[in-house]
Length: 163
Image (cartoon, rainbow, N blue to C red; front, side):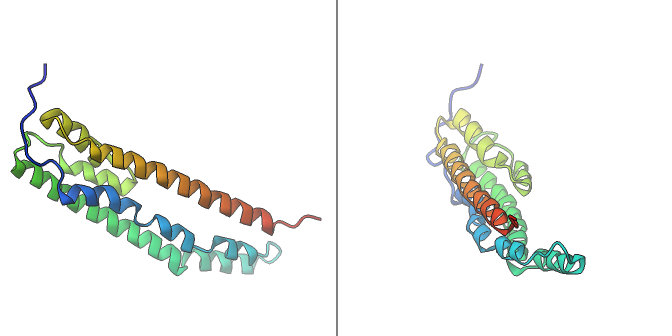
């Protein structure tokens, strides 16, 4: 049997919204990465050119920016998870979802945001907006990723010699 919800005036800190939104900030950067351009330059008959092209691909500024920003934003999500947890404790939420689950954001999973929404709802009777925003952003990222993948497949098919 669970205890009755505690009356807390506010359950949404600015930190939780940063935790929810930051992982998706890099999504538009996918389209700055010119993989079709690299595919057009690929010459399968020349192994040296192929190796050089692969090196160019993995050292491209767009890919480096995407990777680096992903790690920096992941670390920021961990920090903001801690700040949100601390804010919830100060707001009087009993036993809020622990901030260390924010480390899962480095793997791409919004565990802290989902767990925080569920636990805050159980403790206070409020706080599910976080979960719905996470679901909406995840669905949006899925659609954007499918469009990006389809674009890459079409570009790859366009580079194949049909003779």
